[in-house]
Amino acid sequence: MLSNPSLVVVNNQAATLQVGDSVPVSTGSATVLTTSNTIVNTIDYRNTGIILRVSPRINVNGNVRLDVEQEISNVSPQTATSLTPTVSERKVKSSISVANGQTVLLAGLISEQQNLNRNGIPLLDQIQGLGDAFSHQDKSVARTELIIFIRPQIIRDSLDAHFVAEELRSKLRGSINASVANDAHVQAVH
Image 1 (cartoon, one colour):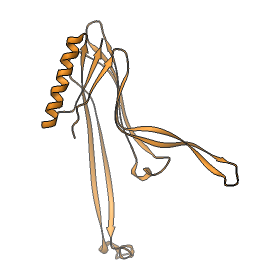
Image 2: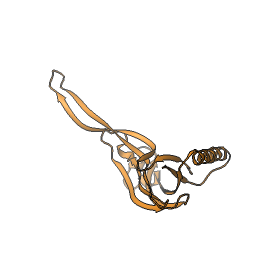
Image 3: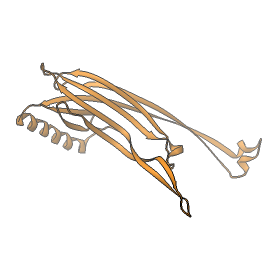
Image 4: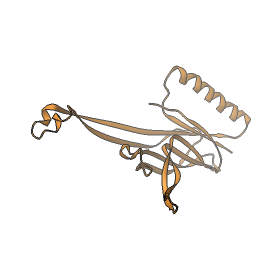
């Protein structure tokens, strides 16, 4: 899957782009001492998915320093229905100085998940010594690779803003007809 998000950020301010879910997580519980001894849980929400935080700083020479945090997080399937889910995280923090309009590769986050499923005829697949004859195992491997390219564009005036808006409109028209490379753009407003 390819994605091409764009984000406009004010100079020296942080912006966050998130594609994912807010997962309820129990942060505490208490028993209310009544005749029914009711248990009350305290719930907070944890953002999961692909999260990109960017703080641009425009230097006097026109380069843009980007402080970037990128995170991929998801709930472990074994704990998905629990109020205390296990969240698997992969994070990268970096700072980079980039020329206005230059595209750079930030990082690639790769994950592999192996699943082993056993299917068989109920009861017969449980017989010791013979169960394997009445069942089979499926092994699958899912590989995910997230590569983020970033291209800052400094918006100094209304002409620059118009140019960026036209570029985004053109990109939207093109993305309806064809897939576009995964190229996150950050525009820093000076």
